Length: 120
Image (tube, rainbow, N blue to C red; front, side, top):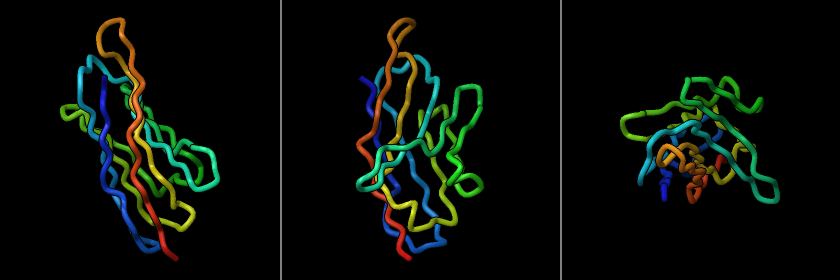
């Protein structure tokens, strides 16, 4: 099993910043894609940002220019720097990693989620 633990969520005023972290542990041979998703009350989970092993990034239009995804490969950690936060960013944020535990054993793991609340 690959376990993910997120941290860094909290309550912040509009215009503020937060930095989310997600640490992966367990048997990991390689990581293909790291990503952050979010789910607001009454809404479906949506993609926020992804980062591939090759360094390609993809962001939701709503966060482009404000959020930055990055990683520390040595620590199997992915970050989400969130600046200029808006009340509309309020959601539970989930980390997702996919890759291989061994040459033929894939994994696709989710974290437990961390709450981000942006007050107006």
